[in-house]
Amino acid sequence: MQPQIVPQLPNEPVATPCFVILEDGVRHNLRMTALACGGIERLMPHVKTHRAPWITELLIAEGVTAFKCATNAEVEMVLAAGAKTVCWSYPTVNPVNVQRFVDCARQYPDAHLTGLVDSDRGLEVWRAALHDAPETVDLRVDLDPGLHRTGIPMDATAAKLARAVHGIDRLAGWHIYDGHVKGTRAERQTQVDAIADQVRSLQNELAKDGINTDAIAGGSYTFNLWPHDLARYVSPGSWTYSSAQHDIELADLGWVPAAFVLSTVISTHPGTATLDAGVKAISPDKPLAERFRWEDGRIVLQNEEHAVVESRDLAVGDRVFLMPMHACTTAYLYSDALVKTAAGRWEHRPQLGSVR
Image 1 (cartoon, rainbow, N blue to C red):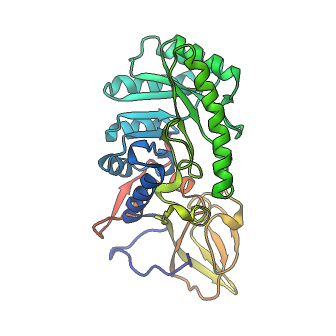
Image 2 (cartoon, rainbow, N blue to C red; image 1 turned 45 degrees about the horizontal axis):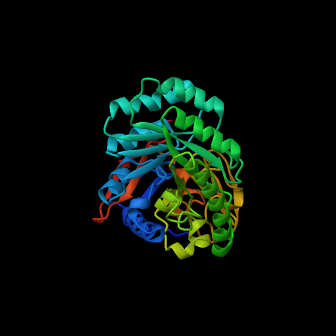
Image 3 (spheres, helix red, strand yellow; image 1 turned 90 degrees about the vertical axis):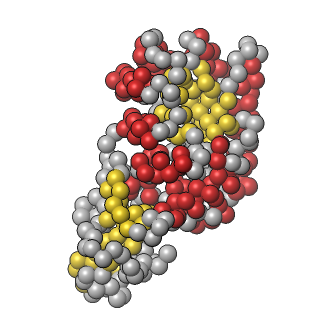
């Protein structure tokens, strides 16, 4: 997307930097994502990628029944929005955090809540919290498919842990996040097939003891590649807003960018323009040159409140849309978003911001 002076905005003044969301884009991306994975009933969207209560409500209204969350604040938000199936995809061993999650089950008795474990220590913490917890809380064993971030190795140790969870009558199945899988679609499919074979082996091993399991699997690059007979749910992340990365690398999915940062040019110098979009406006979790799409030259620098970019013709006071490379972590910076609704109106809607 060529950076551009904003052609049309609400009549009232808009403070910048501002997080801007296009509802039509979110709705389009939902349709394309559901089509890609074989049906909306398989979707367990990852809430961390948008952190917006209104989007959760929209997804529920459109038929999404399950949600994945990264923080307790997200769990509480989706439950308040009416979600009935929630997975906390964070295998913490912190007793306070686990207890907060279990307390949600008491507050929302008609919801089914699932936590993750990937170690004996984690199971000890959960066992203590679950001794008098509602039966609506269960656990999945988090598997490491090669990302080496969280998860237990996909070998006999995983089967042993799963049997221990089954022993306290809380086993739901497996959780697999394969965020390291990249490449062409064919290359990704090959990698997913190899991981799926390992999960099936674990599944078959437990089945010998009469223990039935299923899986939550996948991310943005693999959710549409997991076999239906194995992955009950798939959990793509950044589809909600897409990004300056996914609209190139995952163009076959048909996602459209739906989130931007609106910024104002506050100063100009020969060959450059300074924007009010520093690292507090657009996440710095990518290398400088990749933090947002800028096709007019280089991103020269970005500090707390400013970004300096190469520019031939921007003037002081111009406003530009910036497409983040990673919309998820940018959404985390805002407690409010300016939304262009499906009806064509502009309105401010709340975000969770950085609350955990």
